[in-house]
Amino acid sequence: MTIILDMGGVLMLHNMPECIARFTDILGEEKMKTILGLASNGEGIGDSLMEQYERGEISTDAFIDGIMLHAQRPTTREEVIAAWNAMHGGIPEERLQLIQSWKDAGHQLFLLSNNNDLHWHHILSLYDMSIFEHCFASHLMHMSKPDPRIYQEVDNQLRAWHCDHPFHFVDDIAINREEGKKIGWQTYETIYELNI
Image 1 (cartoon, one colour):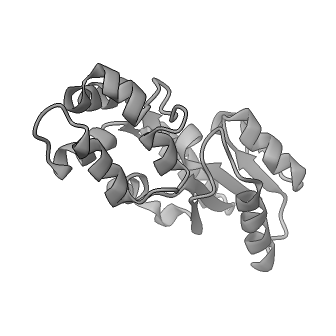
Image 2 (cartoon, helix red, strand yellow; image 1 turned 120 degrees about the horizontal axis):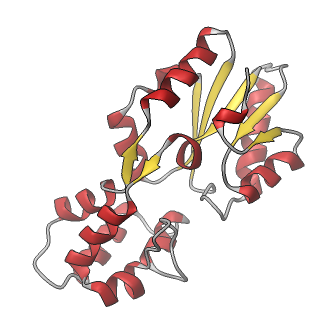
C-alpha cells in the first residue's frame, strides 16, 4: 500500500497562541491582524504578508523584511524567525510510532507539504524524515487553498516510480481530500482512520 501523508494537518501539532503572542509583541495587535494577517488557525487573511508568503508570492527575505519594517520596536531577523517557528508544536510521538509501524509492515510512505523556507527547514531540523521514501514540497500546496496541480504532480511521479498499490491520502482538510479523490486517491481524514 502507498500512503501519502499531509505534513501540516495530520502530523504536526501547532502552537498558534505562542506564535500569535510573539508576532503581536513585535508588531502590536492591530498590525499583527492587518499587515501580518495571521488568523488563530494559522491561515493567512486577505492579501496579508502571511497569505502572500504561504502562496509563494513573496520570498522568505521579503516576508521577514516586511515584518521588521512594520515592527513597533527594534526587532531582529532572529526574533521574527523564532516567532514563526513557535507555531510548530511538534509531532506527537505516538503518531511517529504509528507511521513507523506502517513502514515496518512494508508500506510505502510519502510526505506532502506546502513549501516555504521557514516552515520546511525548521521541520526538517526537528525530525528525521528518512522514514518517508520521498518528501513532496511545493509552493502550490497551501492548506485550505490547494492547487490541483500539486496533487497531479505527485500522482504522476508516484506512478512513474511504478507504485502499483492503491494510493491512500491522509489529510484533515476536506478540500484537500476532495482534490485527491479527483485523481483516484482513496482519502482519509486522519492517520487513525487507517486501520492497517
